[in-house]
Length: 63
Image (cartoon, rainbow, N blue to C red; front, side, top):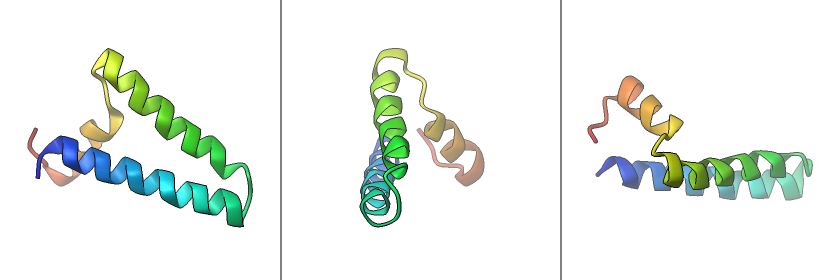
């Protein structure tokens, strides 16, 4: 898998999990959902994605 595939899978999973937690536990979880969405949008314009750095350092995923 490519780096982009991992990032998309992680972002999609986090969004779905936090939407579920926002519905079930507390609406404050929607703030985390918004954070993930904003981070995805900013990474398009800046080319910087924190999850990319984490995957490279921790799991040695190639670009």
